[in-house]
Image (cartoon, rainbow, N blue to C red; front, side, top):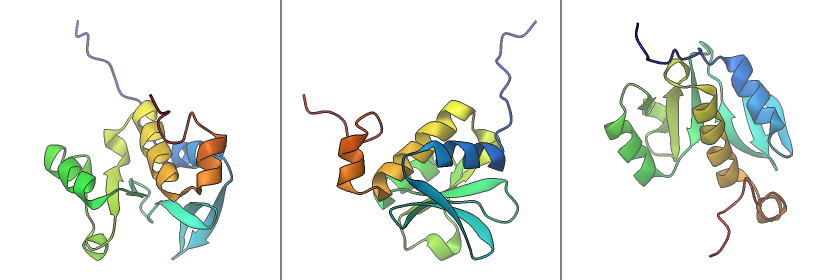
Length: 126
């Protein structure tokens, strides 16, 4: 018997539930798709087919992610010049999805929210 752990399929419903649980997040339809924003700044979109998401990601980190895990991460042609990366939902579990959404939220959230939610904000000084 295999000891490998089965991965529950992550869906756009999981994206919505986790994103809306982040402080001051709102959902807004833009370009005919759900987008999630904090303080007016978008931090995740769910494209039409709902098999992937787009999240904020610094270009240097994005390029490293795509090279390291091309089956999970890629850059859409129209986002090549921006700091966004696409993520295949089928390649994630709920814990990793939560980490990815939280990281994207931190990049969009204003300092007052980062300070008010240190568990989600920047690492505490040593």
